Length: 436
Image 1: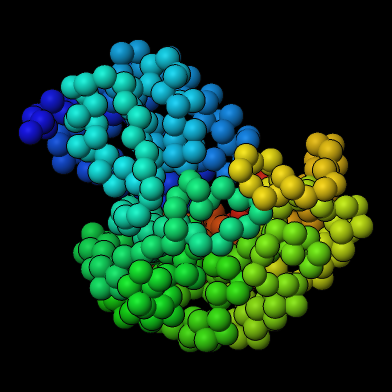
Image 2 (image 1 turned 180 degrees about the vertical axis):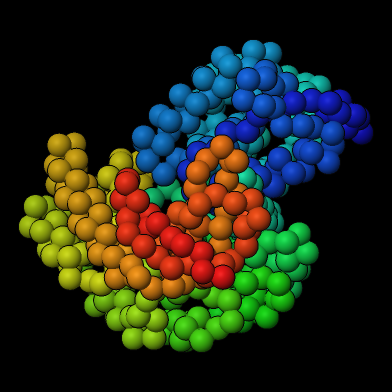
């Protein structure tokens, strides 16, 4: 048995790329290491251990991962460097061939990262990847007020542009009982808001015979948790039943994040998405009918193979018409092993850029208009910790409007009533006045 005392007194640096799920998982790894006497290296310290949690959603993401690994190896000479995550699962040999990298762990091994590190510290450079079958729980706060509860991992949808099923495996989850237990622990720690995360959270229950709706109802009963947010849910899995429940629930906020990917039915078919624009439009109309103040964020991809200029114009017209609050825009990236490579009509980089800018401009206008609707109203805001040197502290309303108020430590992690004023100088938040 490896002596875990070799970790005692070590300083660790952590770097995460990609989604909220990755950040939650990194935070869990950090907490696990702390139990073995590892402390977090400060900004200027050279770490003994470096953990890099990677993303591989696009070629740009791969490039950022390579850059980050090279930079961290240089910043922390002599450190034991561990690389895990989606890029590590898909291209492990490419990473282990990088000077300074000691251990590469695929998505399956992320669940047993501590023994892997202990073994690696006493051995040679190692690569460990395997078929991804287990579910590794994660519920972490990181450096923010909100907690992130991982309820599901992997995906059984094989969209033509996506490598996630290869990087994270098939859909799987923990039990509702285990999720409730973790939420209770958050409440005991004083946490007030939980973001429900996963790769395809609406598919929750596939391995336990439960449903996402059952999970929502169970979490809503956990005393002490005042806010839940559903991070991202497929439109075909966001049932009217879930929407109606959230509208009258105790703690689920009027806030949804729903991937659209394209507003053109022909492109959705090329992507092998499981819905059309009519279903998506119905979901937005349903939300607006029962939660008119809800914030609705939407993912879209521009420049996919097969997206002709005519198809993009059709998609853009739909995006203009649908009543959402914000678009998160991604430019399509060629990914090895995906079916999209078989689709004719390749969009040029310049066309991708131009389309991305058009949607970003549309998104900025929609978000501005959404915020402006609530100027002069009073809404509950959960305020986040801010440095004492800053004049303002930030928080979010129940419907996800970013707010700035004068900084006061008394209000850290507190939900207060705030009267919303005009936009701040940057235009990305409303200036608020605490009224209670």
